[in-house]
Length: 235
Image (cartoon, rainbow, N blue to C red; front, side, top):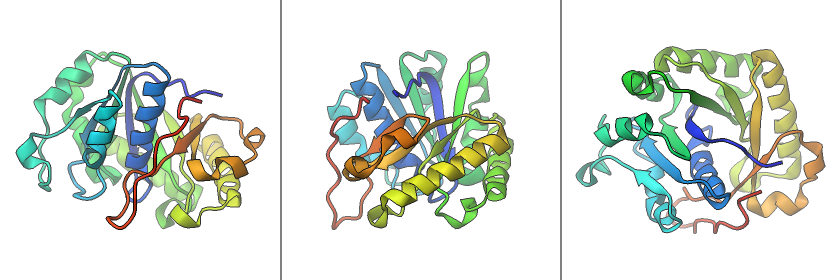
């Protein structure tokens, strides 16, 4: 199964959900599937592990990365480029919005309300059930409600991102998928796809999943580690 997202897609989630890594890898996946892809870094609350850290890699792949002005790239300030509103009003291919964590980060979407007027926005919540805040269905629904209130938008789908970073094993992926199915039922939201680290793909029984899989090549790594290389991302 192939991921079939296009138009305006905003990626939200709680701190530690891995939403930025998902957004980066989704951008590459859709670009390699033949779409024109633009990604905007809207994380205005967290100074670490933002889309801008991978901008050179993304741009080398032909992905348009929209960032705050150059002089403010490393600033932890609420700076929103006016280019963002323009790219939203004229969506083409896939326009990805990487939004800051929790309801605090989602307030930036409310500030873009005028730009969203009359447009369909696919707001996707990234869930890692191995994080304390999202270890229960109730916790996930609470975060969902808080993000929706802050964003003044309704979440339309889920992304399963079950992982323990380097300690992830196949059973973590299987258990995470089962959890997301329960969350999907409880919320009434579709499970758009789950993620699996590239190095685990050969160990995973893909027939166990009823949704697409997004391979993850980790880009947001500590200084002593090397970012993963993007392999076959279009399936």
